[in-house]
Image (cartoon, rainbow, N blue to C red; front, side, top):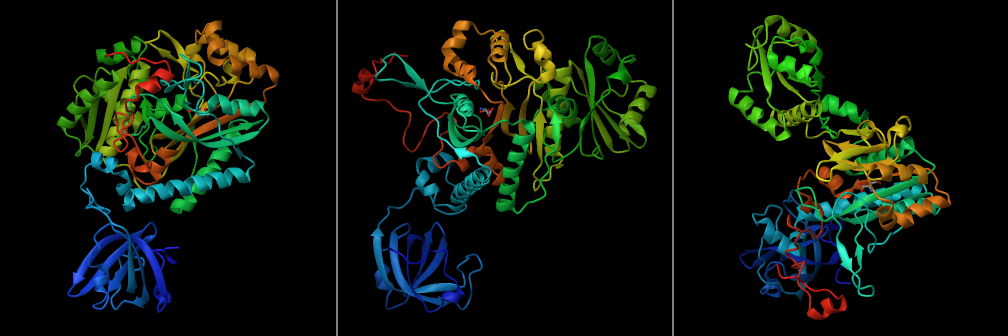
Length: 580
Ligand code: ASP
């Protein structure tokens, strides 16, 4: 072994020991003829001191050289509070260079001004930096906790194929051409969804996998083309069982990584989340639910409100308390533009100050309507009311977006809090304008609510499902559902989705067939591991929590993937590249 201790290990109590350490030269300082070296490895940094008689040993040693040193542990006169090993130094008597290093293209330090592209190109150097290293260690800690909790509860870890068949998670597949079956392709799994359900039919009862998933979609700050899910499925179980298991995992993770043990998991139905917060992933670190004030204005003297209600629209109101001096006219103009992104026509506002109203609709609304609003919303001096009159879905989402934006801008979010909520009973379908048909809101194996079974093919718009999400601080952390476990119901759902018998057989034939041989009731979830680590480590850049991430254009700057291949390889696959 090159070492008998790590660079993060030695303390005052080791004084006098003769030790051997190995690591990278993080820093070298000369003080007259004495040389100090900060030696770094994964575990920390230890100061190595080469006195006059030994400084020759390191005369050629430069930053990032890998060296092995021996010496005696000595307690320092003045401790370095910045290092965990700061009370000691090692007085070196031997040094061996294990590997030399060129000048690195970026400084290896916690703070770096290196651009992200450079850090990604030299990711192995970036990983030497604490901010990246610590996130990888946290990720390992989290998956270890997950495995422990799930194993305790009889879940078994099963690997499912990467070379697989398309899974309907709604994204584009990554395809792998087959050499043996020319012209045919494997699809990389968007999730192990069908396999895990087949494992339930296979009687595995409780499955999990830290599963790689691949989706060829346009990337955003919180997406990568390949990512990891903590994928879980359980038999003879329903929402209550899966919620309990997930809550147990989250509690263990937050306790062991953050010391937090007072987590709560409120439940909100999808329709209520939309009604109160205008979002299916509301950030509950602050309150400010929206109110429905439609009834107050159905006979309004203000034509815009009255006509909106007459046309079947609604009027939503959102109150921010004690902020009237913080929101300027300019801000309201900006918000008025902002809501247009969400297809709302306009944002109305009222301020209540010194027992009087002002604001964009102050003149349009008669005094008694404003008084009624004041009473309904219990307005006090300093309050601001924002209102949108529009189609229900538009009013909800647009005002919900305003809630989120102002919540952040007004500093209402306590960044130290972790607020979970289960969102339940999602719609079964969504209408795709693009495809001109109903598509699954989750995936087509999701069971409908019992009370909505007869709406499966006749009233898709009002058919709700047994799909759920767990939301954390405004991020969707996981999705899952109780699954359909009989072929008849599955056939109905495919029918509602407009899939022909032929399409069903091609896409899911093997899967559907399995349900004819005895399927247990089952349910499950897929937890986004990267998102969880991002929230735990307070970063909003997914690349920070992935060892070797790709850029926003799905490119690996380090290995230059994707790349061209030899003509031979193409010939084997019987593939020809079309000129663009
Ligand atoms: N496969 C689903 C997803 O990736 C999760 C699940 O339903 O278990 O969102």
